Image 1 (cartoon, rainbow, N blue to C red):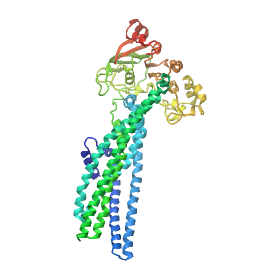
Image 2: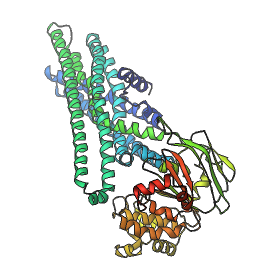
Image 3: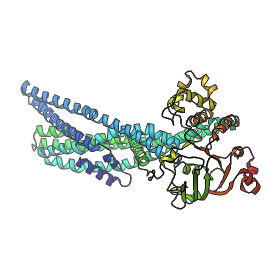
Length: 595
């Protein structure tokens, strides 16, 4: 294991900033134990390789010297047993390591999903939905392949060549020194080409993420794009991104194939040099046939681990990139102090207060929200309006506890000062309904009952009826037991929003509703039909409704007008109309129906 660690450090030192081997592999739970087990198996395998080469050479020399059949048979049997052991040990390595890799990658997928759940929608928005989906599905599969191939190959490269070299040293020190000198030269050459392939693979992975995000965004907005007559333009856009990804992939493959060819060429040339000098020494009588033949048989085995590693490294570059991306998400800091608010339930006398609250995204030049001050009490319908990019969704994410505001300013619930709203007690009080509600690969009934632990089928039916799902459910082959979500029956945007509404109707204990532009991607007819079912749920709830469609505002008790991250106006719709300020300007510019 120590030799493994040293080799990783040496390779990474030579590789510079772009590490060839992610040293965080050593920190994976249980990895060191399996490194010891695999190290022992690789050590025994290396001994089997040496025994195999030795007795094959003995059998050939005895045959050359026309000795008895018995003197040839025994070395041949020993060779066959060593050969069989060598390959059985390869199978054993894979059989021992695969369950661990499968378990680790499965746990990593669960940890990733849990982490994304705790980080909230802001993390998905930052990285892109397509990127997150790709990372959680194909990315983890690539990580599994990467772990399975690279770990065993590194151990093989850190044990087998040195045992072979030590044995050759006892046979013929000249050839041992030559092989020892040429090995780091080949490693250096491999690193140089590996870095070129790494940079190409990085761009390829970025292109893959971009393609995923483009595909998901285009798929989601396809009905809208068709209505606007832009579907062909976006089809060309997807084609351009796909073509860019294809070119990056071919560029990476060219370097990988070139480096593999070059590595094979130099190792073959090195073996040929050893063979030539051994031939000259045989002719001069300086070496016997048996040690010379043994060295010649072992020379390809000496270079084989590094050739296998190079081949598998190029084949798993995307796996390394995927691992780095997954670990980057897993290492994202989560908000602490989540239990500051205890035994809390939103009621008619409850109060939420922001005082000069500010929020700045990482690496941003200016705050996304600045000096937000507002006090909300009881069961009210709060409309949050403003132009695209004004900060509506950011405010919703802060209210939901998905983002932590800057230290400047103050947040209070019922007079208690809180560092942020990622409080377990607060989050048990609200439902979040985004633009695109997530639907699990489960039955329609299970999707509706997502927020409730114990619920009867009558309650689910009642919630579905109130959400306007009855007519659609009648058309489903299995009704509420129909599978929907990933890989199952497709659901339209309007139907997805109604399922989210049914969740809200079902859970009567959650008195705070967060709507983040829930109708942004729906056509006017679907939105109008959906509005009739949304309005009843507003009763006896605190509602935050972020929208860029002002026809919802007439249903609100209080309105926050956001412009460039600041609340420029707030009050009832009547008060804002009387002020004749920003609110009135928005209505006049975009019309009362839609901003």
